[in-house]
Image (cartoon, rainbow, N blue to C red; front, side, top):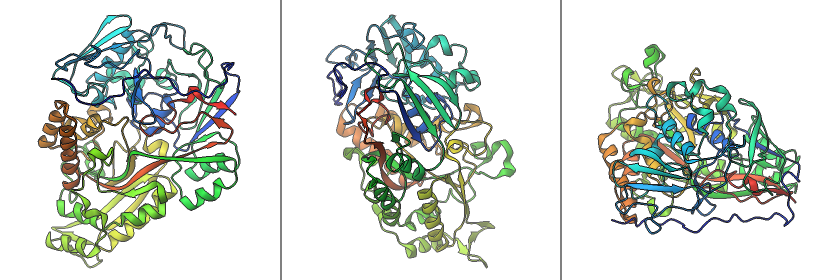
Length: 565
């Protein structure tokens, strides 16, 4: 059986706008602002985009995805395939050859031993690795020589590019992290805040939830890059302030995730100091439904399987009514403009994977939502809030602090009140909400609420790793340091079986069928309620050249090519 999945095979030559006589560090300083501040520089211990993308300036994968979604070699010499002998004929192994001459920022050689160690680090059963789904079905990772590593799978893998590909799956240095395996991983503050890397920059200072200072990596493989000698990665504030700092004041060169009123954004851009850039990928703003009981009375068992099922969100009728009551088109118009589309799917792209089986949600119908709850026996009490068997439909709805998200919360609260659902709103600073601090009760992984809202996406164009996020093994819990990806605590053996089938299917049309079936199962069982298919909207100063917006990988994927013009 040969893999029929299409992958870009040509060696990657990044488009460079640098002058022929460019010198490393010649353009001085560059300022980046992510209004969600980075809390750690180890993507294996955080699922937050701001942590993954800030760390991508320092640590890199063997391959990543370009702006068109093509897989391209990065630290690897080429993309392994069946045709070039890098992928076994039976699809049970993939062998990566590393570019010769790559060295870490501390001057030591980058070898296959670092790649092997990275797999051991993430696959450790006590480590709670946030990116563990990238290593699904990996049986072993073996060093063949200093520049060759072989990944063997326990089953044929038609898409064997999970490990070491994309911003979520970079390589960390064995020498630096070898004492940080398993349960010790979160304790290694020095390593997690200042990883050594092969990327264009290295860390000089890290202040969690605030600012990161970096300088050009003196050992970067291209002697003419990066063009900037130093870099500041600033976090905090809000999306509007970040946009203003690039488009109006010129204080910053690049601003990420400008989730603000589109009319305000257009007005800011008229100042002429910067350019707004946007593109659609796989990002979906969604409501995650807690299927476990988040009651504080349960202590350490709250929001875990040990605490029992949710008192009312396990009722399919309630979840369906909550979804039908929402006007997604209005949410998109008010909060996103041309950078948003109403969606009923968590997997909206690429187009081959987009289902039409859940389109009921595209049209708001308050009357239908009320009828659904009536039929299910949820009747209004004296205060108008529906109840059944002594249980009230009263929801704690949390998200990160952001003007668009708070506007969305307010609208959803109003619509839910029209169907007899009481809603308490809570917003949490993004650096805390998306952080990996196990001591905080306010992380999106702990999910000490009934409903939570955020956006998620995946690198590249193949959804296998992403869809594996909702298998039973991915449920966050104290046992895995709250670092799983399955926030709803959804566990369905039929879904897990589909995940296994997807991992063993080569034909692209069949992969699309299975992925859509997985999407439909999640949607129709109400594990989450999608709202908006979001385009990525960012901005850069007109004086910053070389920027190529990438919705399939880290937005900072080609920061080595940025320059001052």
